[in-house]
Length: 89
Image (cartoon, rainbow, N blue to C red):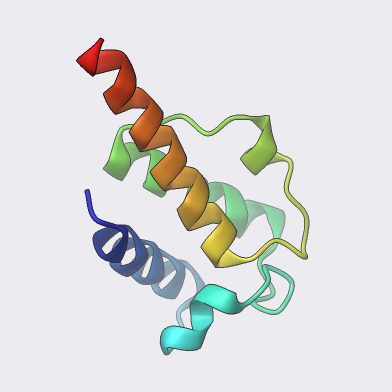
């Protein structure tokens, strides 16, 4: 899956959870800037895991308010790439 598709879906999930429309600068924002509380954060992770058929590790689940949306998108890409490597072996 292309990074652009991951970004678009992640953006739509955050907009749905927060009830706010964001522009492209969303991806450089930190969770704290989005006022993402722990419940909203878990909702976002669950939706992303279900959509992309992945499981986030501790490095994502234990992130803090300084973490950017781009970091989460990078993690999704990394997890998906590692799953593809296992399938290809």
